[in-house]
Length: 115
Length: 114
Image 1 (cartoon, helix red, strand yellow):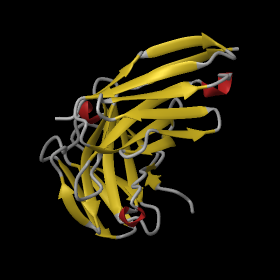
Image 2: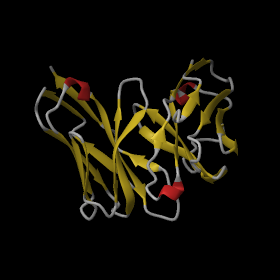
Image 3: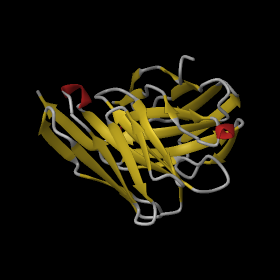
Image 4: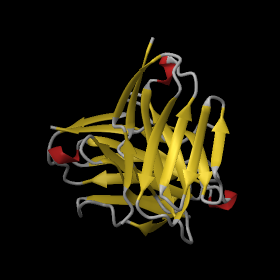
């Protein structure tokens, strides 16, 4: 398996622009998570899905952030409009609930810079 | 709200030494605990996962222990090598009906001197 795939790996944009981050979970994993990592706050959970349905979005910082999972193999995290304080590394992770172990597997991350 | 603390924040030791990284969490109602490794500019690599019913897990030179009642976990690295240099992150998953997200510590930045 190729693991969790994220794109783009790096994104540089200007304040006010829309940013879309993409994630493909490991096939067969029914949970998908979005995390954000900053120097100040470390790694924080933003939102997670089970079988394509958002379960907990309490970590989403503002209404400017939205996430969707239209099917089992694709999810997006959108920021509109983007602000410099959104600069961070965004990680996607997935896990198979049926395994009972629930080890989370992380993608390589998208490094976002908002100028 | 669960809080995870890792001590020390940074550690530098000569090659060959055995070392211990510490992780503590405030809410003992956890489902499991995972240790990750993160290299600069890279993603997270899962090292070990300990279920709440387990006391320890081993993988090669790594051994992780869990004392759920006291809210502590340690990661033991034997015979450290320069290639072990990285940031080590501890994360806990709350117990519950679903696969909740992880709560992470800030990590221990480890440098192994050749």
